Image (cartoon, rainbow, N blue to C red; front, side):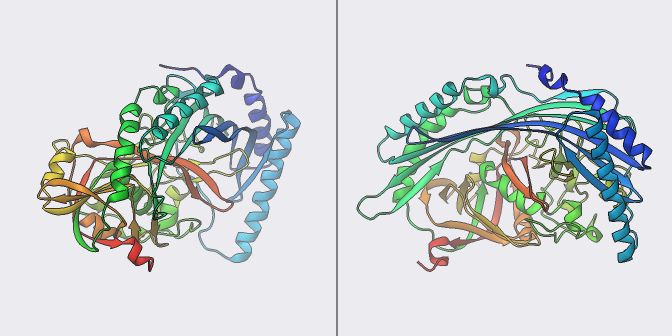
Length: 508
């Protein structure tokens, strides 16, 4: 269903404020200026054993002005919706840029002048994400009622002692204008439902949990009522899987072949490819939260990231993707492009400043700010591993393994500050013997370096195995910003991966 941008947002003095701010920036000699007005509403609900445990509902409204003056950035933000106030904010941004330029000159940094890659003008463009029902139009009682109903369904099952349920929803409006003439108005919706069942062995005190595999999605309320995910089927399976997990033997550490389900592999993609191919990290300009990157710029076109079956794209256009948008926060029309082709590093994620600095003709649309009070930074696209058009089903991939493990669902992870040495756990692990699943295992983590792991990938599944996973809470920058991002992937087969026993590694 196609939606229009909310009329209540369009009735705000968006263009008048932009005109006042950009005119002042021009008058003060700015080489470039952009204006961004945002209204971001976020709400969440939490239930514990089908009873309310907390909720929140907040709206962040304001605007930001960013300028280039003397080859340096300046930024300021405000909330007062008068033309004089918008002009003052622009003046503050220019004053900051002048100060920044003085600091850069005093430091004597060669080549530190900021320049932007070219971008065509996009005048009066509107973009709205793909969803049917805005979750904010659904009564809160209906939302919590559905979560409670699902919780009760799990609590009635034998062996389930507790159930945590949650729902996070976001409605984001954004207006952008710059001195080149680009003007965009956008609206997108996203949500993340999750349920976790907990089992407790009263005799031993041992406990474990199992969470739904449904990923967060750029969808509306229809996602919880049957579009895009089989909630009834998943809730029906969880109690039996959890009971089996409680009885499962602990894994014997060693080398195993792995079939990794998309519900787990998306996170490995995020940490070992997504962050590593942000060009600001690869150049050493960014290290907050996730460090820099082993995939340095001098290796573009030569680094063997993985096996020849590895093809990874950056994509800000994927339907229902969490990082999907029409135009980024620098007025760049979003795109899809190759990051890794036949196992070789061939691209990076870019904003306009980094693109020009590194010699690219154009940004690929990766600038984003999570609020009107934050400056745009280079953020992750929907980074996805492509399926093999003629690839196997998950069952057939498992059928090609004599001694291995099938990994399902994400849990904890650890990775170094170069995005290179890592280990990942999961929600569910199934022993594979002679091509068949042979019961669950516990205490499993797979450990590798990024290039060894992706180099061991022998096969990727076909399109029928492809799922768009992701997260709401990717962190970056200082002060910290949070962005939602999706990662699609098929099931995949890896040979000879090192498996750790997490209980033994913990010294227990």
